[in-house]
View 1: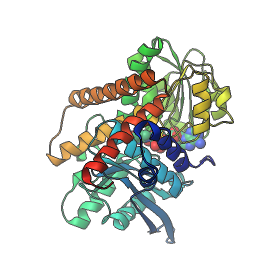
View 2: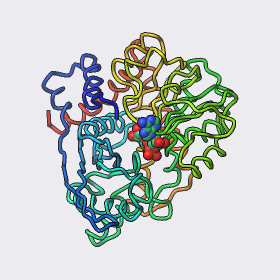
View 3: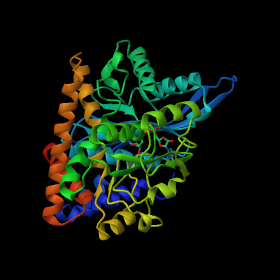
View 4: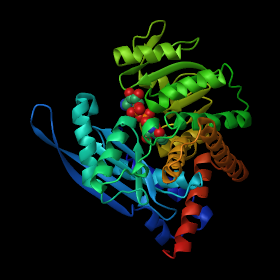
Length: 415
Ligand code: NAD
């Protein structure tokens, strides 16, 4: 992960809207700290019989608006400050999308790429054993994030249910559809992001049909972004990348064939009829839309001046650092901020919770219609405030979101 500290970056975004909201320094100080965090050491028996202790975290940032919600990451470069920053982002994201939820995030420092399926299952269950008193369906509800998926969520739900001796679907979202999961959750983040791009394209005069798109990351969010972009909006996905590097094809990549290639070889690289490129080259391509969908702080002050995209849609959390953000805004490159653009995941996770509470299962069309309404409403609110006040869309998003959290804290009598 980049050297920049995500938590410090997110705190700066919070400050950007303090004056507009007339937030006092004391109140700002309250919102710059997570309300609760848990640090655990998780012993796991490895396949060779040895025991390894993994460090894990769960940060509940702010629960003024409701129970906290946020994913769990398994990543070798995880840090507590990244998790704090991501938990803060979740707080503002849930508020911006008008969900009755606060923000949280969890993580374990580990490299799942070097672990067997059995080791990952034992780690997932052990994480829940270590945190089960801290989370819960009406307290804090995790979900998938980088290098965790629906299988991991199923193990975690099962472990929590064993501990409390009752099946508790609502403790975690992003589960398999056949085990309390929601239709449409798998691709919700990417689909929601495309609803925002579709609306923004109208406002910024970009024709999506044939538009050139580059996507960094080809995991859950990035791969679905490529599929949906090509199938539903007829864009030309000219480049994608993963942790090893990327591929570029001027006429557009055959996304389904690329998915097969990645499944077979473990990477998008060396795809026939495409040229290998680096992640840095991908970020500097001359495209209409750049979609960072991997990790935080990939567009920084060092490379922002090389970005040629007409606009950036942040499908990842925190991919553009604060100083790069200012530079791109000054150059007139609109940024659709993470708290707006990638809210689809938590929106459908929330819908999954609602279904779980009622032991219900909605049809895919119903889930997608609700997702679309929420994404479009949030986009319109952000765009109107940003264009009315002539401020970046990130600042407008934070103003709306932080204003809602402050109001909830005041109603509760906390401040
Ligand atoms: P994932 O684990 O499914 O995929 C991550 C992708 O990033 C992989 O293709 C990986 O190869 C690539 N990657 C890792 N390191 C990289 C590097 N250094 N350079 C380039 N690519 C690299 O994770 P995901 O769920 O797709 O999450 C991606 C981003 O989207 C994260 O920022 C996450 O927080 C955010 N996000 C995810 C969801 C969700 O529903 N999964 C929701 C909101 C936001």
